[in-house]
Length: 481
Ligand code: NAP
Image 1 (cartoon, rainbow, N blue to C red):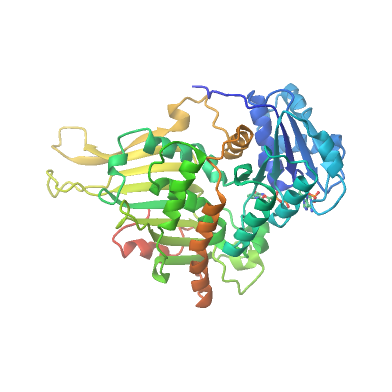
Image 2 (image 1 turned 180 degrees about the horizontal axis):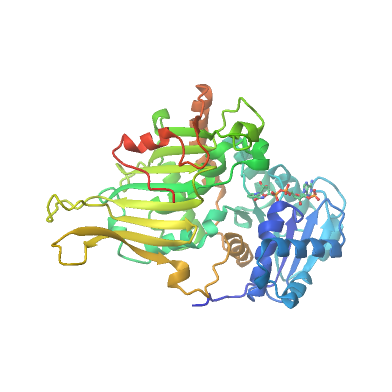
């Protein structure tokens, strides 16, 4: 099966921070892939902007090198690369300066979609928004895309929302959380809301618990100093994991429209109980040499967590009594992200004691090998009597939909949604603020007590305390494979 490609409208897209890591690794290769697939119409223009004083040709060379570095050679047909490079232009601009803006304004065309991607440090978002507005470069139909982190706490997120709101309306602001652009995450919505099968069981009467895991093998590496100011709670839980939790726990929206979806997600965040210290485990990887968090972050007294596990409660009729366990960390055993919905035991077993029951689990795999599997009990084949066995009804998207299927990277899909003007997979300002309002007191509590994260071995599944968090409830984490 080949993915259907519906071209977007012709556009002018300005990428601020076009020489940076994110632009080189994700945004520009993503745009190239959409061009290659025919989704970007002829006549569209991509304008890079940064302080580096590049000519258009310098920028094209930089992009060509980025494509070679980050995409497989098989994707780089020279004629297609050359035609993509033709779409590119560049202006030298300092977000806080006065030069270059007229040059940029002159490149903007009427009658095409106009979008500005802020792939720069968040401290510059306000400067860019102000200049684009005051110099008339952005108009009422223009869109801005802002990267994470969106604030460091509620106060800074509010301040950022306020400054953007001075120059842009909420329907022009696209706050990216690239987890929402993942194919499986959207499939989660399809599975829940396009089938009758699961929804009747999707509540605390039938769901024992939910586990959400985002495990990384990499450490903080060269980003140690930066990471140390945030930690796993701010870097992963407040945004990505909170979004996944919302999609699992939300009520069915009345339609698949941006605000209908976002209203329901917001209700989930607002229904979260505060977590108690006994429901949180924080960890730091502690290895030898460079494999040690404290060495990598450069502060031997750091109390920042590179791992966190939490038990959450969503206080509403649907979920009262069903815990949600979240864990995420760096330098873990493998790179794996999944959501697992574990169902309760049948009320009565007719198969006797010798048949050990195993829970039905719906697993939604985000990476690697995006897909889903449903673990069900079946009869073990053969003449050995009625013996039961649990098996996975496995659906790897790549296998099920054919090896030709080209699953776009999250950034590719999200940028195309910006051009289409569809905000469904972007966070609204009040959602981000609600998430910080829940996170802030949790962080304040551990900071007040001077809690020290528990050490864990690099390459393990995290600290002992995380295992205990579930063991004391008579449950266990799914293995990180
Ligand atoms: P980066 O590698 O440091 O790149 C920053 C970019 O901003 C460069 O192009 C830089 O070019 C430009 N820049 C810096 N100061 C500027 C100014 N005053 N005016 C105009 N341009 C300026 O950062 P990055 O990793 O690409 O990250 C960009 C944004 O994406 C950040 O908000 C980051 O938090 C977010 N993000 C990044 C990643 C990632 O994987 N890298 C992932 C998620 C979110 P010049 O020096 O030439 O001006």
